[in-house]
Image 1: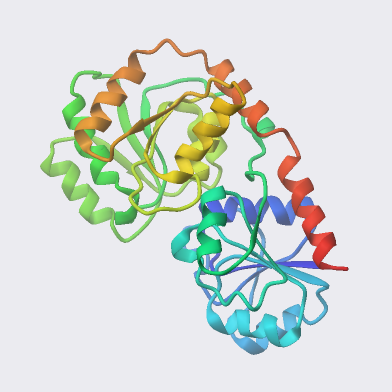
Image 2: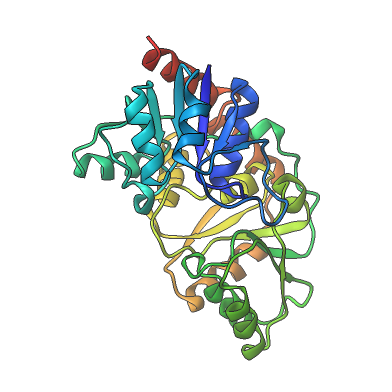
Length: 317
């Protein structure tokens, strides 16, 4: 039996992937000592393992384990038990788990694989974890912004200031879904800039949250894998504006190589350039069905989970 282990019971890109794997692989999820679903937004069922003793007992009958960034005590237990293990790395700043523990390391972004090589770690690239065919086509609406979290690394202050510079477009409603410690500061920024910004709680089901969006925006400042939230928006046929980070540019390159016209647009990281690109995209007459079709070509249904099943079988031999 495969066990899936993650640090926190919360919400976000990692948690979306954990839910997918638990459901499609019929695997239990263990949360290693972290957050206890404080917002009621965790998308998967789980068992808490708050101590090394709890964790060791939970894993003792597992044939293999797949884990995401964990506290050191948890990886020490996996190493002690000598269970075949797969480490799933999502970002460069969460790549520091002990690489002598996993049987195999995987990532869904080529630049993460390349980064791990600089650490002396050989990682395998897997297809992006997105069930495009399960995302309904957006119905359209006044919202711009995205499903995110309220931390400084997300660059939401850049988006708020870009909305002020954009001007006009009075029908637009700058809206974010998320949680995080930076919320009070972001609310202050919006007030100082005199920008109306909805900063709502976390979206347990992003598929529903995206339905009224006209434009998805990411302004992340920290390098990581391609933001899953942006891929979800694209799967709903919503155009997206993103920073020039490798994870985002990788998707555009892949689309160009496949001859697919993907509505993914870039800005240079500044509020001024973001406002400029937003204005351009908002004036485009984009057909959402074409964006959706492009995503289906780039991410064929079942591609990711087939690769994961193959890797599980390989490490379990």
